[in-house]
Length: 416
Image (cartoon, rainbow, N blue to C red; front, side, top):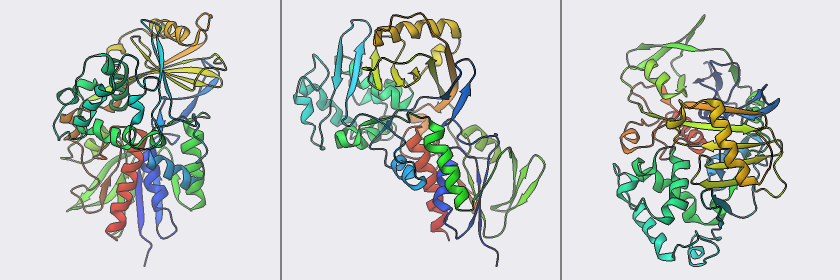
């Protein structure tokens, strides 16, 4: 009797997570990737304009991201993430020059809100109690319907925090998704919200170790294999149609479709997926950061939102950036660099730079789009779905992508 085979379409984080979970020697695992490399949006590449290897997007991870930590442990790269030993988030108001550090305490009881030096300046402990209403949010509610989206606390904490996690204007964002992130991070104390960054790059942390792990487990990864169609027979997938090959799907085999939402929609007739997306703009500057600069710094009242200090460069992330898609790259570089010089006190002209605009970086994390996210099971008996656009309970993040792959793999295992 032939061994069961799992065909995983897509070698982004969702597909790799599913493959790592299933490649235990009891079944054949084959991953098909349309590109020449794995990783999708979570990868590094050589940028000639900088003569550096950079990430195609900056990703802020938190110590409470348990799927991230588990994945890295499985593939042997758990030490690839770096960050402060304590949960500290320095901020600067670019309009006034005022700076402060948000400093949650260890443990779930948030006594830090009662200490002026740990909370947002000029706010009171009672201001933070409004967050309790968010934890009781219901499906369909916007964040703006649940908490006050105005005032100093919103401007200096909730707006930058929820914009970063939702990549959507917070007032219009899903309150349920915002609540889910809050429960898993801020509400669990400093141990769950310590900021972490893949200092040596996303590929070095996530992708290369995963590919080595899969190779050791005898899983196969086939690059430059773009799936053109799924051949259906009754209620199951009978074959995979690639450019030059057709791969039959055996009776005991399964497919995990871990591709972007628009691609999945084209391949599976009748599949309901998110339709609206939001952009992210990243800027990279080839200049060494000052030694005293924190690894991650938040900014308000400027174009820059988050500044990342890598050993060989400074990088900036701007979320919900649809408004910037038509702005010239040179203009963006100059405007962002003006923010960076203010944040770092670097007195230097614009260094070598690169601007990366991701037009459809994530689905819009609104209640309407949240309702369109499918679960891991499809209408076909042997076809499962994965991707940060599926119903993970989280916004489109690295954590969500990994959980989606895990859930698809677990669904497969439950049916065996």
